[in-house]
Image (cartoon, rainbow, N blue to C red; front, side, top):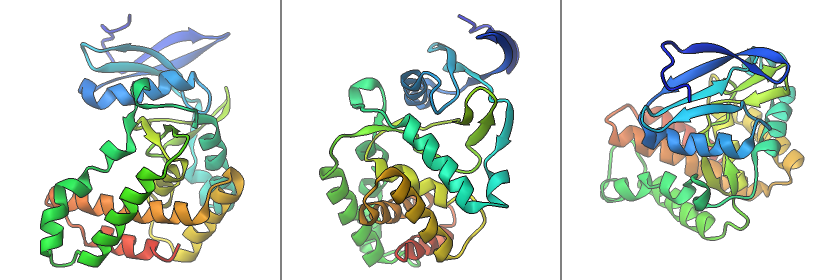
Length: 252
């Protein structure tokens, strides 16, 4: 084990080359699903897990080199960047269940349960009907999920890096398990605000490339966006921008 690393970076052999590895340490509760996902993927579609230490809540992962972020592609070719992201998702989606150490989407979406009473009572700037629609869709989508797979959970333009080992690799997964369609949602969020037409096209590309049901994917986008707004609400943060995005997602 390499739990005594004195710094974030350490060089060790991987295959026939020397690569930089990154040591990260946070509470184990947050790291465990991430570690489970990286272990399941064994370097396909994502950086390799090299070591982990439960006592320290740390893990040692391969650093993708040269590490160019996908955002640098999207600035010139948004369709091309979306196709790359679709290819990464195809690699990391593996048949899986809760027993694999991943966190279920049901658990991930508990923000609806925690905030239901307050939001149904009425909160300025957070439309009750929007919450009710997303909450109902959440229950329906979870109940109708078949063949759950391992999910990244946070795939966006800054979490996909170029790698001379394997093209493009995902980093920093949440380590979830559930419906494939959910994994598209975060990719629509992490750049500057774009017209709904841009995100509609991205959804079209993901659905065409990955064989996803378009309506189901759009519905997950609404659930995902309202969940994000719920988190901001309960944390006392400004939730109006997230509510606005959730309303925009109805047009996807």
